[in-house]
Image 1 (cartoon, helix red, strand yellow):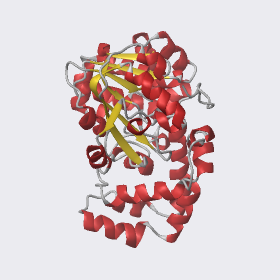
Image 2: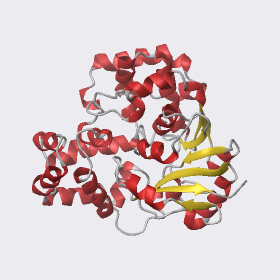
Image 3: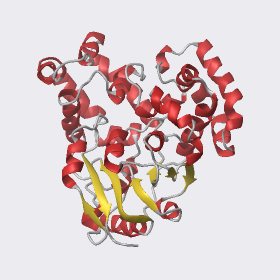
Length: 371
């Protein structure tokens, strides 16, 4: 298995920057299915649980990411819906937080911490400043977007342009606005700086995350950004809303939508956080489906092939595996065609609808070797 060189004691992603609707459509969880999922902040694992999975094992090598899920579970157990949103910081940006709201969050944490596991309590007790500003703002990636929103975006577009971009429009109107207003020369120049390999590696993700990436980074992300701003609605996109406005006030991520919160409150014991890598998680199978985020982005082709074998040993025949590639091309079906077969047409169709648009490709492979 690949060993990441990045620090594993900080929250890298306070939110899942992937659209779980692709996972729900691709994996189609049912009441009888056990699913394996990369944890990250826990959002996608929770969405899969709300969508009908019988059980979800959410694994991660970073204990700080598991603490994000642990905090969500404790809050879901105890807080009324409006209090849940305020505590997490879902509908307010860091910039708009008052001293009173911050104090209220710290008091709320004191009241719900007994519902969290010991590792979660230990982590957040050591990071009260992140509780105070809202845990959904606590990640390194969120800090990157905060810097982008505060320091770079105002050099290109003012509040009027941002409001216009986020207005409901038909596709033709979105395309016209993008070309006539948004995609000006200054936007292209500053975007190329902000989303360069150097900036993303040192300010947003980690330099080691690009070890297997070849070719330009910013230009490929710019192509996907154009897709999100023209081909997809911009008025109800949670990830676009967060980047440009600093909160989910305009559109909540799926796991936080009221109907899913109500489902989750009754099913929290069906999700299991697990500290470990794919090899460790594979011992807890069999699974009828898996969400592997962009795990193969950090592996070379040989490591991807080895991981395919490890994964195969934990999957039931016919199990679907969903995952993304950001910039490094990796495929289970290509690495291990004797174990996995691709559903390329469905994967392309789903990727075209991906509201968390940064990823260059989405994969949906099926495990076909009998265990």
